[in-house]
Every structure is written in structure tokens, then in C-alpha cells.
Image 1 (cartoon, rainbow, N blue to C red):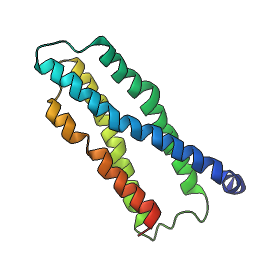
Image 2 (image 1 turned 90 degrees about the vertical axis):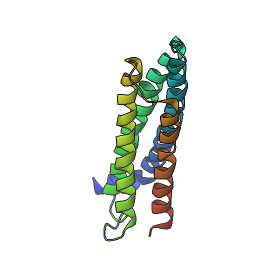
Image 3 (image 1 turned 60 degrees about the horizontal axis):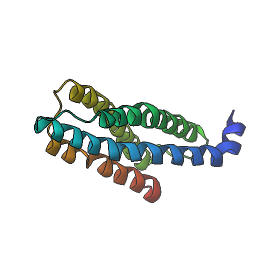
Image 4 (image 1 turned 180 degrees about the horizontal axis):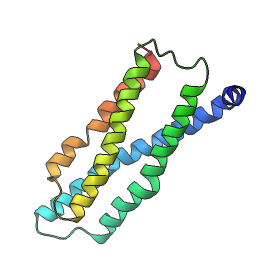
Length: 148
């Protein structure tokens, strides 16, 4: 198994990077869709059916599979000998930020259901929450590249 992980490392790393890019794109875009959804509701209008479909498909067909693939490939990378030194700070900060990002993903799924039930937050709240994945991304990238 160790030999397999070592020889597959560049492929797993490439898959991990692609999955993270897809996941992050969704984490940046879904809260923006929620802003439009919430603001239509505040104005007394029903959200467009296409907006509801976009939210559902983004979450179910792109974000969730990308998150699962990012986690799977990431754990395979961690299992590759010599890649991560847990005595350093950076793997812990990255792991914490990835767990927080996963929590944000789950929060978005809950918010989608709340919006559909007419109980979502304000457009302003979703705008503010849209900054969280950016902050987490900064922590993750600095952790991996700088390795502090």
C-alpha cells in the first residue's frame, strides 16, 4: 500500500487540487445565489425556479462530490509517508481550516432548506458569510505553501 501511495502521489495530488478548485468555486458561488434568493423573498417576490434549481444542482452535483473527492484525495496524501510532519504547526492549521470549511458547506446545505421554507437569513447576512471561505482558503494555502 505504501508503494502504491508513493507512486500514485502526483496523480492523487492533481486530483486533490482539481477537487478543491471545484469545491471552492461552489463555496464562493452558492452564498451569492442565496443573496439573490433572500432579496427576492424580502421584496415579496418568489425566487425564480431556475435559481432554486441552480442552488440544488450546485450543492448536490458539484460541491458535495468535490468535497468528498477533496477529502478522499487529501487523506490519501496524508497517508503517504514523508509528506506530513505532524510535529509542525501547518498540518494542524490546515486540518482545522478544512474542517471549518466542511462545516461551512454543511451550514450552506441547512441554509438552502431554510430558504426554501421561507426562513433563511437576510441577503446582507449571506453577503457577509460569503467572506468565510476566502478567509479559510488563505489559512489553508499559507499553511501548505509556507509550512509554518
